[in-house]
Length: 290
Image (cartoon, rainbow, N blue to C red):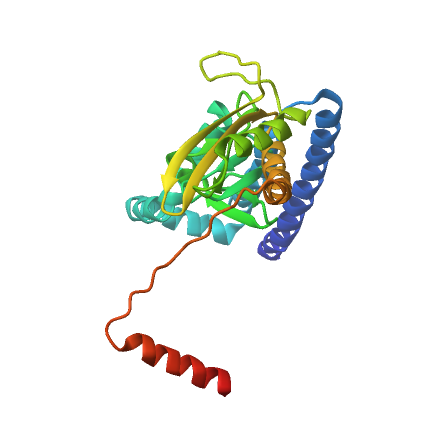
């Protein structure tokens, strides 16, 4: 009867662990939201602690079950009797999990990125850090999809953080014009548009130098069908800079057309061997008749 009561406690302990985990997570969530809005604090540490609560509570629950259940006590003795084999199996199975936990702790301590930071990865994917757990980091990409990346991968991969230390960004906008177009006029149109925008910041070089104009526009490439102009300008953050580039695309379509500036497109020259032009013309006529 006593053994039955001990086994009966197992679901009670599990349920209690689940309820305690839910309650404490809820308290943490409310605390994070209230403090973030009132004190503007970094929530990264709180998110990590919140996600570690379940792990700690369930670990304690398992220990209690083993200590208070007679059948499990014997099982535990058997396990520890073959501790060498058990340690080897657990060590091999938990190698990746342990690496992710350690990497997660290092991320929290050294903070190469934080919750809500905008990151860019080597495969050109971008996204905001939504959560950091014991095992993985959750990235919300620009299409509102979630990317789950193990913490060990996040620690070893090269990452561009747009929000660390300084959110300002030097954006590089590129547009092509034909060789016949007026380069000076195209440069003037781009310059005037950027100068008129209040969300474009005053120019500041990486070396601390300043300029009278907000943007720097240069010819950066001479390619097959045209010339590449690159406009460099500063904004408060990546979102603002990207939005300006989209608006500039729309504006230049109108301004370039009004001022006779052509945006080039690929040209191809077809060379026919003897007799082929006539055959191609005959096929074209047949296609039109059908």
